[in-house]
Length: 311
Image 1 (spheres, rainbow, N blue to C red):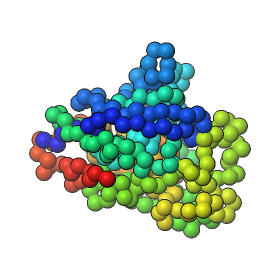
Image 2: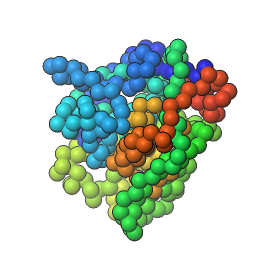
Image 3: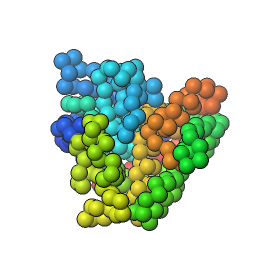
Image 4: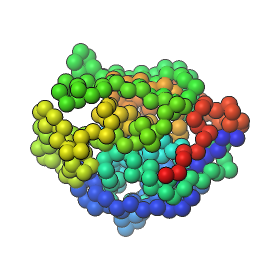
């Protein structure tokens, strides 16, 4: 039987929210089978639990934000996508995330620090079958047209792979790879995707900060780009780091479904909003998916049965 996973022991991290700039402490704890990922705001007079699902996403501007019932006026947790991406990359199903503020810390701007935290805590295999959302027919969402066109779709596939293309019309971005495909059966998430950092343009800084966003961003946790070039002295971690970060985000956004997907995801200029819209459209059509388990590990897609190696 292909079984669910959590972590063996609790682990902690302290950092700042990239948008709020506020200090925040994160405590990751093991969770029982079939719990899913549950964020808990422990800083509130009465702690609030937010089990992750596509329908509790309440804001998708610059990040994925969740709140109970998807109510934007309720207590929230912002910028969950990098931690969710790390959970997907390590095949984690169940986790409690205690948080002392309303935004997950940005750490180094990628998922690598979360991968390190989770693997340092150890991966525990649980006595319950791992449940997948298997896509049975193509679902697609599209927005805009011409130069503003962007789209994302999920197609049936015995495994999990993602293909993403970006188009920024910027010399620093155009000089790098603009399309990447990552297949969980052949790639190594920790090596190939996890280290890709979030990025931002200097021309957008004033607008973002006027909206209370990006207050914790700096060159330690963001790739900063002016009109012509990357400003970070250490350059890029991957030749195609920009598009790989979009794949990293998409993996996190899609893991918000609450179970890993068996699907092929293909996207052009998608983002948090379109990714969530795609998930909601999939889950709204009961003929488009089913929930499956694998009694024999040999029947599961390659790459899902192996535990990620320890650091």
